[in-house]
Amino acid sequence: MKKFFSIILTSAALLANSGCEDFIEVKPEGVIDEELANQNPEQMTTAAYAMLGDTWYDCPVNLWPYGDVASDDALKGGSGTTDTGYHPMEIWTTLTSTPGEFDALWYNLYRAISRCNRALVALEDNGEAVIGSETAKVRIAEVKFLRAHFYYKLLTMFRQIPWIDEEVYRNSSHESVRNDEFSYGEMMNKIIAEFQSAYDNLPEKQQDGGRVNKIAAASYLAKCYLDIAWGDGYEATTGEGFINADYMQKVVDFTEVVKNSEYGYLEDFGDIFLPGYKNSKESVFAVQCSDYQDDNTKFGRANWNNLLNGCWGIWSCGWDFHKPTQNLVNAFKTKDGLPMFEDFNNEISYPELGKPSAQKYDPRLFHTVGMPSFPYKYEEDLVMTKDNSRTPGTYGYYTSLKEVPQRSKGETFNSPWQAFAMNDYVFRYSDVMLMRAEALIETNKLSEAKDIINDIRQRAKNSVEKHIAYAKDFCEIELYPDSYFADKETARKCLRFERRLELAMENQRFFDLRRWGIASETLNKFFETEQNDVYDGQKYAQYYKDAHFTAGKNEFYPVPYNQLYYVPGLYSQNKGY
Picture: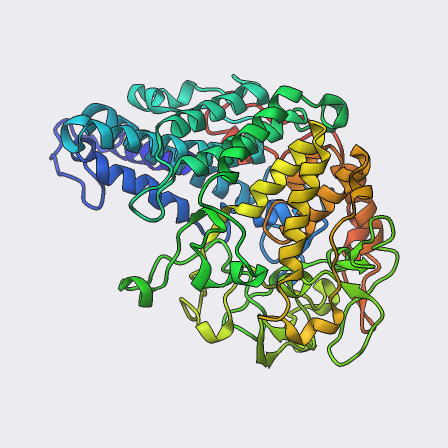
């Protein structure tokens, strides 16, 4: 918002100093005429959809720096700790409101909300006349879904945010809307109301691919209710002692809708992260991406969220960001096919092809983490080495696999920037089912939760021969016996471990830890051990000696510095910053 209004203020100043009483009226070029836009509600809806993929590395809407790098799943990567402004998210102690990445994300999300507001005005004013009442009703539901999606991202990140809707847009009253008008719970309920309206008016299936539908809305409703079912996000008022049973039941109810839909588990875990399967039955809702060869455009609609995350030396423009931690690799260890809940991180362990080992791993490790000696993304003629790390003394030798295609599929763009045609998942089917399992455990339906988790583990067990047969001797995974779901405490451990393994490097880990009220406990323990990382004699990640997560402060990110002075005194900062 600040950037937009800076342009207005600059223009106003130039006019004020011109000394002219009469102005030549020239119609501006390169902008959409407001009246014309209002008369084209279908095109304005499309413009709102376009904001789903309108991202860049400094404002990734999939939130990988904030959900993964800020957690125990990922190191930042790159050329060193000063490469981009994301290092403070790794160590928390130096985190302030000043990184430009915060301002870029805030600005971009409110720019998206502005598109939605303009589309809603066009639909309300002219939708029925131009596209018919039934289509207009569905388009309004779609745009409300999109607006709620962007608001959910903002609330997840910044907590204290201004609610700017179509009425604020109509009245041009942006500069009087405070960011502390609504509590966290009240703001979440406003977002829930948007998704509920979408759910009530969307069809289960859309004719056009990529449009949101009722099942996607049900998934988001489940996610919102799950967040507030545990508390308000701050550890003092979040966790097992603050669970709202009614909200947990809402999660069960809305995930039942997804369970009974056309969506389901894709048969092989590895296929989920290949471009050829990006709109499979696993994909409940995803941001649609393409390359120029697919859609006959000059540049395609690439996924710019992850442009930094290609592997060094594999891609012509691989910047080597978003690198898995040793803690995450250790978490995939198994004993008798089951996770090692208490002692998985007692010692550093990693597989090396050609070196037999008694230590076995969950097969999902080899779909998630690229490691020296193993083929990169299943391609056996492209074996990773230690040379495929840009700064091994800082960030080690692992690389992330899920968000990139196979190298043989080529790049969407070449030097100086690179992007991929990979969709960005907002909801995978297994994610929604794990939300369901979480709520089932908290509503004392442990047996059904066990069945869901075992279904997911069975899919992982079946995901060896097709893509990672070369790692077969390292893989061992079994289903949980009934005894692991005889009590709620053990069932929770199973659920939380399963979310980590299934959704590793998919940008959710920190937000899961926050929801459960265990971020400070988990991360501070992680900082103590991760600073001792060694791979084949090379020490790395020693910067974690300076890391500390402060409960009561770091659960949410600070309101960006620039936004605090958009209108002085209008916005309040989150506590602790």
